[in-house]
Length: 163
Image 1 (tube, rainbow, N blue to C red):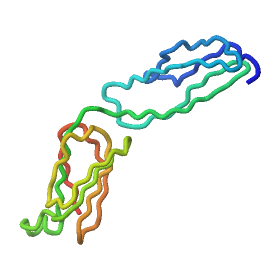
Image 2: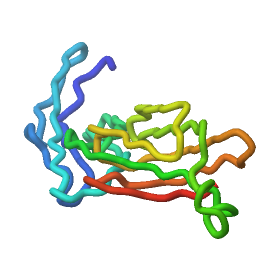
Image 3: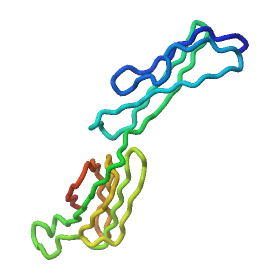
Image 4: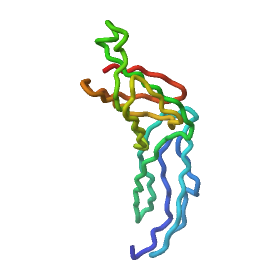
């Protein structure tokens, strides 16, 4: 703008997740001047794996700026995810044909969109060192319907989808 902003105030979302890491009262800025603001994000130890969106606002009597943000709550910890692919028809009748051959398994992290894939799986397989989080799991095999489901990988786990 062409005039000083007047004293500015930083407003951040309320709650335990966010806190100001820079002063919330900011001196007036002249035209062409800039300043930095910082917001600290401190998720609880067992926070859900998700994307949180919100707005930080900088305002004065003469100026208003809304700054949108999205923050992904993720983990650097890893786990193992095992998938057993069974055919229900054989599962309840002939145990020799219980596992489905030549399947493809795909894991997609619902927050980071990181993908893991295995092809030509014969009945079961484990993904190791998978970052903990929410995943969309898709299983496909010849002569079987595809199956997609969601799974939270939060450490060693096993699940048994049926096709």
